[in-house]
Amino acid sequence: MTRPFLRWPDPGLKTPAKPVAEITDEIRAYWTEMVDAMESMPGGGVGLAAVQIGIPLALAVVDASDKRGQVIRLANPEILHASIDFRPYEEASPNILGVSAVIERPRAVTVRFLNENGNVEDRDFVGLWATSVQHQIDHLAGQMFFDRLSRLKRDMLLRKARKGG
Image (cartoon, rainbow, N blue to C red):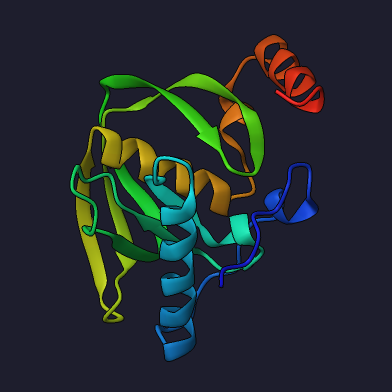
């Protein structure tokens, strides 16, 4: 049983997540719950941040593999380097249903995080993996994908969302 997705404009989606001091069994249980929630999204999501289901910790899971089952668990993820090449991708969120927007993000990023073994890891993410990990890091900073849009596009998207998509 997983927690429900918070619904925008829930304050929990706008509050930066708290850093994780160490990887414990409780943290691993959160990650398991997050993977289940990600897999329950229509079409199987490609990532989830803990804040999306009301856990205020800097935890994320990402799986942009074709076959699934390649999930990467991240605690305290931070971008060390981003490519100068950008990639457009239509992003959405289970926290605000019925709307999406094309967001341009760096095509590749190097991310430092605590992995499931509690070790600091630097990993390169490219393509959809990079898009997803950046999307999750935004969530952990209290930002939604539509915060990257111009004010006009963001206002139009939010009006549409309020009307039910």
